[in-house]
Length: 110
Image (tube, rainbow, N blue to C red):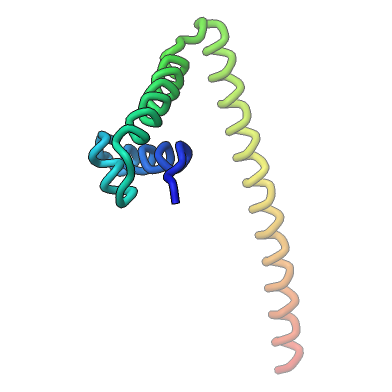
């Protein structure tokens, strides 16, 4: 069964995630075989794709946009905290109510 470009790309990604430089030999070893020519061609496209992604990651946002994104992120985080705190208060109130009913039933049973 022939090794596909997708398999080679996936293997190169896995090696990179493991901190191993995805050389032709490492990819071939991880695949358990394969033609160096096939792996070489696939690795050229893999490197090109990764280079394009890296270039996109290095794009710096204008300061106004970055500040607004940071502000939006902070607002979202505060909203999430507020929602969590509200739920916690409601859960505590419900627990206190159950505790009060249980204590009344216990007192009544005595």
